[in-house]
Image (cartoon, rainbow over all chains, first blue to last red; front, side, top):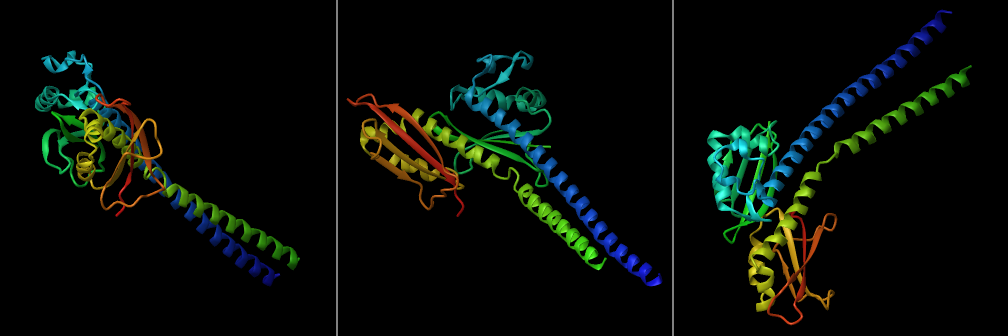
Length: 165
Length: 142
């Protein structure tokens, strides 16, 4: 009887150890996977937001199409920076830059990026910055970046849209 | 009794092995979620931008009129370093042999992820004036 009991106890201990280690592994794995998925979901959501914003900037004139001449930002329904697809309008860019100091939050809202901080850079292919809108991200931030190419007065311009929390 | 116990242990071992294999394989697949999705989308979008820009600044037309690829080559070699680009121009009557071919320097083809966009364009002072531009791009992994 005693021997049987000992065998049973050892057996139970081994089974419990295996069970607990598998359970622990499962919990750790579940936790890691959940974190990974939420990280990717957040990044995807951010990526999608800036893609939409960048597309609006290089593919549309904005609404109304002469929004750069309006004084009140409340009269603007959407922001676009081109006169025709991929051809930038300097006056529209200048107006966007002018709004940087006074209406940064409203511009983010018009571009559908209220949840994030925003930076838009207009550079040449060598990285020389011509225009800059918004804030610069810190090194510690997870930043989503999307790039588009358009013409500004016949020159190829790289437009970088960056968003982060 | 002993045999029964042995069978049960073997059964448990199989179950544990299967559970571990499932956890490991799902972890492998989940670790690769969407890593390249945004990069791939960006390359596609940039490829479309490149061809639009080349069309709008008349580089495609100039290459045909002057039978000279210098302007296209300059463009291709100044685009961001992480992107490789090929441009091929065809006449509408021969879509097999390109008239002009431009490759970005120091780029080897990555056949796993090539994006290609074709666009027709018109050259006004040519008789048979419809041409086709094919722009192919991929990530530069060098």
